Length: 297
Ligand SMILES: C[S@@+](CC[C@H](N)C(=O)[O-])C[C@H]1O[C@@H](n2cnc3c(N)ncnc32)[C@H](O)[C@@H]1O
Image 1 (cartoon, rainbow, N blue to C red):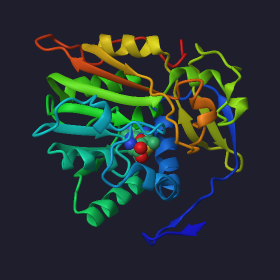
Image 2 (cartoon, rainbow, N blue to C red; image 1 turned 30 degrees about the vertical axis):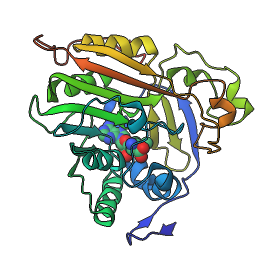
Image 3 (cartoon, rainbow, N blue to C red; image 1 turned 180 degrees about the vertical axis):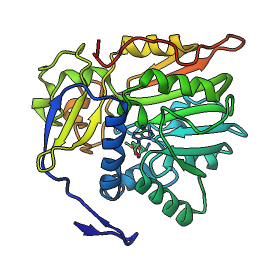
Image 4 (cartoon, rainbow, N blue to C red; image 1 turned 90 degrees about the vertical axis):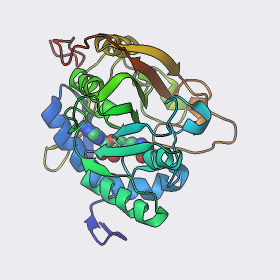
């Protein structure tokens, strides 16, 4: 237990957990992950905040910036929504580029950090607490929706989350997101040599679930979709995929970030970044029957 600069007592390091691969639905995933990010937020910002930059847009641990990649397209005077905005670093950078960026995040504590950095930098990101599967915005409100390692791998109802994104985007709008590269699900989440030996099926979509050893409560859930699943999801909701970036690990980056490291990053991709445009003039289905991507039949 540590007392933080925000004056609230946070519970970290994490209590002992046991990892499973088993089904987990949307309510269970959201309940576990919201509480997990509330517990983890102080540690996360203390560890990664400097690398992220208070007004900085990184797509992942490799360090690829939006300033270099330009996946989102023009930002000046655009209405932009960041889903899973955390402490708002990316959205703050967009504001500094002339875009009207807004944040949405599940974690109250992450949003408190966002407010803290707003005040420190003088660049404020109006933000709301919510979830990717139920965006509290009117249809066609945004020109760009994006997520940098935000909500998408934490939701079970991914079909609903992509449908919600299509709903709040204007026709022709841009959707871009980064996630753990789907091929990483074949390997143990270990930044060393052990993390280079494939031991799990790439096609096994069963969620990764951590359970608190003491209480038996689900404490964390992540969801896997293959590259083909993502292509199908985007196409099924009226998006035209234009970009799939798999950033290489750059020389000089000796950072360890969970399972991301130079040891693995020089051989296998750790991050996948998708960019897609919403079709214009097409009636886009909202949440259709979709396919079951969680492995549930
Ligand atoms: C790895 S952080 C990414 C934030 C920021 N881009 C960064 O790099 O720090 C993931 C964020 O997604 C949020 N999140 C998880 N599940 C979510 C959901 N269902 N809806 C919205 N946000 C969610 C978490 O609270 C957390 O702040």
